[in-house]
Length: 121
Image (cartoon, rainbow, N blue to C red; front, side):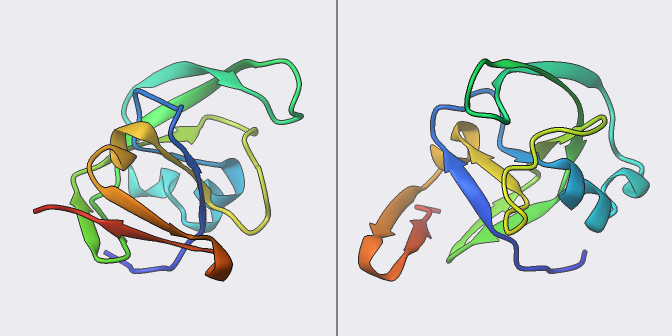
């Protein structure tokens, strides 16, 4: 696999998933070309304008492993948008969601604008 540092938004309220990539990251990382996008579904509660929530069509895929600080997560599933949507910031690749976050402890260092992830195993 290829290692690439990415920035994500943290959303501890987004349950039922590990990671959601946005459309631009999907294209830049060529996630759809890897051929392991399996099922299609939709997720709700997504709002790109901060207002009303709607649904977003997504495909599910296995992304292998992700390292956050010193915590390594293996065999993670991720959602990628089928088309458009969820482009929160040009600096972020997507959202780290609750199913991933509950597997570790997060230490927030607000003065330095960083988060340390610590996993027990």
